[in-house]
Length: 178
Image (cartoon, rainbow, N blue to C red; front, side, top):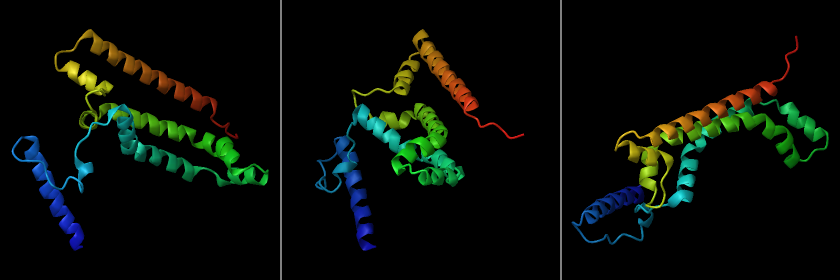
């Protein structure tokens, strides 16, 4: 529609003006009230957690939705017939069945977030430094024993979580009839 096209044109002019303003080539734009949220503001640690949570939520959703689709609905029906309320059914039947998928999605999201230096760099302010930002800033000067220790700790924690997850899955695997 015409309103959307005009808004896109206005935004283009505004962003061009903001770019020139940041390099000292022009005065601040007059359209600040309309596009105030498009100006970069540092968000801090809580904001970074929210940004990464929103950015990686689809990964957790994919795992969880798959687990919910493959879940046997008769288990929830049995809880309902037994007189168990919906909240208790959620925590005693549904959640334990989808917990491995939620944990898997969380682990994937956490692993991917360690690699996403660009989002952390652009969204964080001067007081918020993430582990990948710290590692990158120190690696530019050369690999120190501190960087090697951090890498070893990340690897050890990852392996520990992976082995613990495998042991938990092995303990809770249903017995096969046969």
